[in-house]
Image (cartoon, rainbow, N blue to C red):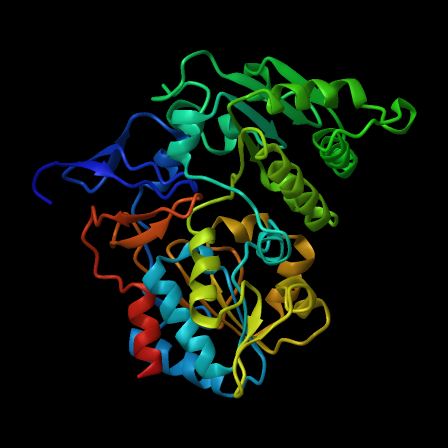
Length: 413
């Protein structure tokens, strides 16, 4: 590039907010600068690392040789596992699912570092949610529960909640927080309930009881005064939004807590409007959940078989499959999730024949490793924001690297 170029209204894949108002300047050397300032955007908007497009057993190889090696590796596998689909564009996810179908593979489309029971809750109970635009324009009471967007989603407060101007608000927002310790976000709220994570189910049950007009024995709920205060503010709001972080729904009791909270929110809707919003990690895990549902009719995780896909919400989770030794090969789509995955999972992954796709060195070995174009920087496509809204990505920097979708389609040819 002989001179700098400026791109406006760029979508950022640095977190699941997918902010679509960025200005990105690409200088003559290919270095990117973003505005407005955001640490997640500054980190994401860099070209992928240098290195060969393909490695086989750690040695540089041609793309054609890598595709042939991946075909041979997976041809001998009886139970391959696909994971990390949230790092791909929607087109990349569809290609990955086509490949998994052909191979008869297990697919866990969820983030292995953040177990999410939402798929089961949507089937069993249902969940009332909304777009981020609705939260911004209508929510006059917002509860952040185990969520610290000031750190994890830096522009969420500015664009969609506490600092955003609500089109239909006539007064100030009421802000509340529940967390194990004070956070950057809780320090911005009016009401803060400090509670251990282990108390989430108790709090959710207490809120549900209050929402149904039940009396609660104070001796049976140590946090009753705080919970009553939170319920009073949520139930008196015109539009209440409960914003959840991964810590809330990622525990062993996550499904029970989510189901209880979904029931509570449904009861709030008898007299006012209330919704739940999940601050998933980025960039496209919600898109992965939707892509697998489009393809199979089931939420993740599934196994493709000759007679059609099979669904097991707990038994087909990547961690369980790996721990039980039910997997004999892995197709891994690398990203931030891999750095945050449990150490025992990474240890098990290292022992299996692996084909990996990523735009930087993941630090985890793979027999065949493809270096691919980075979505939203080196290639386009689309991803889904955390509220299910699809957004188009831009190609800002030219590259000779292939996309994940292109490699998969060649491997299937």
